[in-house]
Length: 320
Image (tube, rainbow, N blue to C red; front, top):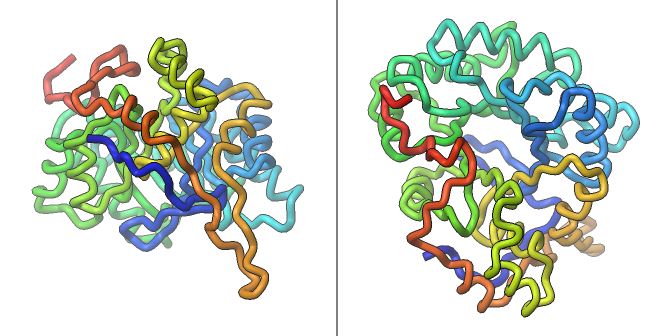
């Protein structure tokens, strides 16, 4: 079953420790489908509202603008440093293969390096090529992360997205395997809990990042969700986001509406200062009633709402 823990200590400032010792903010702002001309403003606003984690991708076509938004925010807010902001991008399927991956990292560097100096996390966006090219890309990414003075781009962590157990085992069993993925970014929500995959990831100390936690809107008028909203007095948006946080996910919320950015982030409470120790403690908590969690516990559900309703984690080489 899904995690039925009704409450966890978590705040807007909370971070999870990755398996390489780096830290990642639990709340991320994603720029999927954000137009390039709007991305800079949206990222700036997200950072102004408190986000410290921005998620982009080569495929999105807005990496440069996202980096510019970070740069402009840092210029205007001297109390925030580059190290305080976590920036993720992802390589495309066309960049699978050793040489192709290196070429795309060079292109990423041209887009973002002058604005943000380095990239915190690079993911393989999907497994949808073949074993040789997937492993070739990972070989290249390993070299970048192990050699920060590579002259092209400092990459602090590497991971995967949309990988199933078979794709992860392929990587772990490869004789060239040196660096463990720090995260696997997946479509995750109550209708797609992926319990076996999540258990496997916990076993291997790989964190789950949830994209489309709000189901890209597809489930926002679901009768059961609307009934829970009415009975609990908690908005459906808050229910879905809190459900994801309670599962222990890194949660990537996406919206192009400026006012909605803060609303999504404010699902997390503010940290409270311990005046005696003069530091911010995670005294805030995220919680949901048990009956809401039980209603959203759908262990056998496998409703894929992205990728044309075809689950990329189940991709087999040769599939179209």
